[in-house]
Image 1 (tube, rainbow, N blue to C red):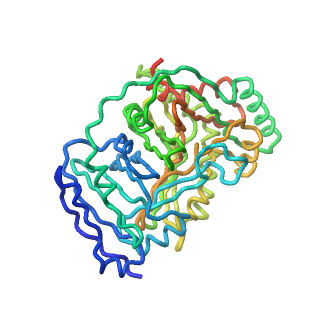
Image 2: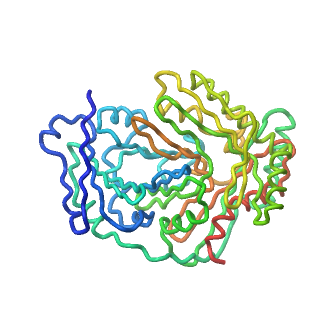
Image 3: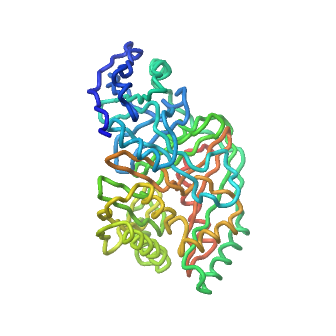
Amino acid sequence: MTPLASHDPITLHTGEWSCLDGPSASELSSATGVLRREWIINDDFSLSPSWLESAPLFPKIFWRSRSGGAPLLAFGQVATGSVSDLAGLLSNSDPGIRVFGGSRFALGSGVAKWPFPSEVYFIPKAEVTRAGALTKLAIHFTRDDLETSLVSGWLNGIDVMSKQRKPGILTRFDQPHFSQWSEAVQLALAQISAGELDKVVLARQSTFELAEKISPYALLALLMSETPACFHFCFEPTKTSGAFLGASPEQLYRRLGPSIESEAVAGTRPRSLDPAEDTRLESQLREYSKERLEHQFVVDELSRAFRRLCADFSHDEKPTVLKLSRLQHLRTQLSGRLADGLSDEAILDELHPTPATCGSPTTKALAFIENNECFDRGWYAGPLGWISREDAEFCVAIRSMHMIGNQLNVFAGAGIVAGSDAEREWMELEDKISGVLHILAP
């Protein structure tokens, strides 16, 4: 089928936001996919995650790319399903439409204890993007969904949000606690020594009870100011699910047509405000054998995946250092040209989970995690992002948290390889959640 024709956006001024006309009867009668209508909103305030607080429909998602791309938010759904089902629908729909979603770290493993679906992919009812001084609203329609009143009502209720105070912490509880963590690390080292594993990533859930209520979108806005060089996301699938949010430094993949890029991010040192000390820590990161070994396992596994996915590919000869506000990591970038006929579903299946969040060999590392972690990772370290006909982008959902009510579950992981030390790795977990602790008042 020939994709539907898009329409030029119409500029709306304040007071005119109820004038959101849908497609005509003739357009609907010939439609086999999703129709898209766009409006330029003439406003003078920046798009904020907090706009989603009053959004009337679920799911809700906020996304901003690490590469500095335009922030966007979306809510509601006109279609949901598997990646392959929705990719087929996109082929018969208007251009510019995206599928949003993601999944748990490990589908089908253990008993899910999160109030989240295991996997969600959807085409939203409404999408708002911001680029420079331009804010664009898009509404999607099907033959069975011509609704505009809920979106226009939401637009008329948006106002500049007041500054959010940092919420205080009442209690903290870690799973595992340090002695359990040490036991798991020693068991992993024993299996590595015996040749059963090369690397395994162990994680921790730190649960904080907050002293006052804060919306996940306001919390994300605070986090964004502390983590400028990251992917930022907040996903709330249902009214009762709570929200999954975070600031991830790690790209799973970016696709533009047949071109694909990914990266190995592994090996960690903290940052310092003192330039000389920061340089010393960077030298440690580059030279310490444990960090280089951990990083190389990720590079090797991703290279094998790219050989299966790509007609040709290349990667950096030596890792660079990814500098974040509080941490620095070794990073090796990979790029290639996809083999003919490969879908985003196939790419996701091949690249997730990466050795940076799971280990190597993958199957044995997953089994070790399943048997030795005392909490449900849920969507922590899972794939999260979007897909369109032309391109796609997913992050690895690390440096993330699940918020429900006044409870905030914060996740962090560390790669265990030969030479790892339980206490040093525990402190790395603390470094990785330091950005969240900084935005929570003592």
